[in-house]
Image (cartoon, rainbow, N blue to C red):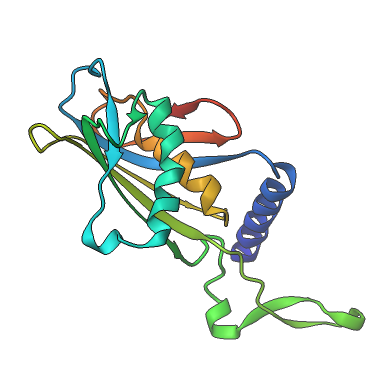
Length: 198
């Protein structure tokens, strides 16, 4: 009964979040960043750098999702006169929801009211859940040294990567060029201007 109550509470929470916040939601990320920069130079320009495995059409679209957060952090894209290179990596993986009932894998569902008002064994209703990671590496072109590195990790029910990834980039760049030391949790409201860390 306790497990069933926990599962129902989780489904209600997700449903409320999806229904009540159709245009605004919070992306909470675990972030850790490292920097040797003391301040931004007079011309903080950058261009994107790609690994051999990133020479594909989708990479340009992925990089475009980071342009806004990079600009917000004070960097300016200038492919012809770049001072830094920015290398981005990211991935999305569908995983089991933390609200999933472990008994579903054994029984294949739960009890509830079915069609025609009959109470009995029902099929499983699985909630989608996604694990996402992004990483940013900023390298100084003149010395070829990495001057900033950050990683952001998020798990949640949001399907729209085009909305979630920019929020994760913004979280990864929070405090740039001198981010707080150590791991931290950063919340970014999609549709709202400012993140908060805790």
